[in-house]
Structures are given as structure tokens and as C-alpha cells.
Image (cartoon, rainbow, N blue to C red; front, side):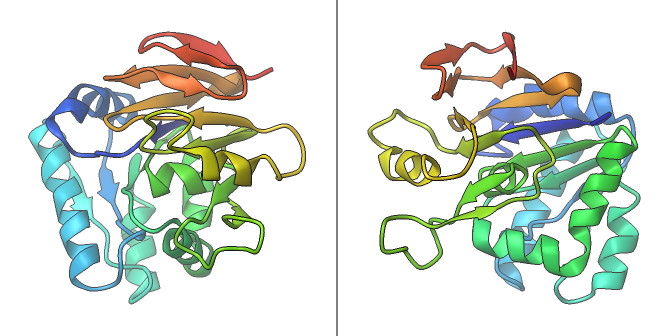
Length: 229
């Protein structure tokens, strides 16, 4: 993966996110495109996308746009999204976001951007669906707990529990992820915090609070780097 993925735990576009998001703008060195596909079509999409556009413009990014909703106008949306050097996927419903990405061709845009050395930022639901596996807490609950589904898998064997405040609060999510096949490294990411996933699966914590490496039972402090085994 020549590009960079930023997985954030939520609370996106708040003042505490300014420093880590400004770094993404510098890394991308090009157009920023926001698409809030985890939100419902209509006003919810428009408001969340607009919030992201205002946030990144306030950081000094010169070329920031909101993409048309790909569920309503895929051709127009894909044309805008393909111009991105930094693609922003805010939070909301992971089920809705995953369906929109896979059903409109935006999933291919994400992969192409990373292959070209670009930057993709996902917050909360956006971070979850970029991983190989994602919990779907907004979907119908399975008989044995929360359902889990394959995500885009643009990062290594990771799964994200966003809005992290501790293992007890995330117990249902952790139980759900324990059933996925193979070894999965679970990241508990607090709000206004995140990790950068770069080449060779190097993870660097950023933002306000440490990211919990749940599988390894340790914290990754902001600025500290850890490599996937």
C-alpha cells in the first residue's frame, strides 16, 4: 500500500482534531474531497459533508470540496472523488457506508487513490469499514451477538472499535470480533485520536489520547509507532 490510511475513533472535525488533520493535508499535497456516505441520503449527507469541508478549509487546505452523494448520482460523484489526494469518510452508520462504497464504485476509488500514494481518512464508521472486518452495530443483531462483515480490507489484519473508553464499554464489539477467522489485531481508538497506517503496516498513534492495542494488551501513545507482526 503506497498510500496512507488514517483511522480515527470519532469526534471528527472538532478543534482537537486540527493538528492531526492538518498533517493529513500536508501529506496529501492536493485536493481534499469529503463524502459522508455513512449518513442517510439528503440533509444528513449534506450536513456531514459540509462540516468536513468547512473543517479542512479552516486548516488552510486550498482545494476542498464535498462530493455529490454517490447513491444519487454515481457518475458525478466518481468524477469528483477521483480528483482527491485526501479522501475523507466521516462517521455514521457502518452498514450504510459499506453498502454505499461497494454499490457505487467508490470502493475502487479508495483502492486506486492508495495505490497512487494518496491519503484516505476514515472516522468511526469510516475507520471501521476500511479494515478487513467490521462490526455492524446498526444492523440486525445476530443470534450470538453483533454481526460482523468483511470490510474493504485496505489495511492489514486490523479491526477498529471506535469511541474507545475501555474494554468493558466495548465488550460486545470485542466478543463479535473474536469470532472472525484468522488473527485480527483490534484497535480501540478514542475520539479525537487515531492511527496512521503506512507502508509495511507501520501504525503510528496520533491525536489526543493513546490507541489501545487490544490484542497486544498495551497502549500506543501519540507519536509512538508499532508494526503489525
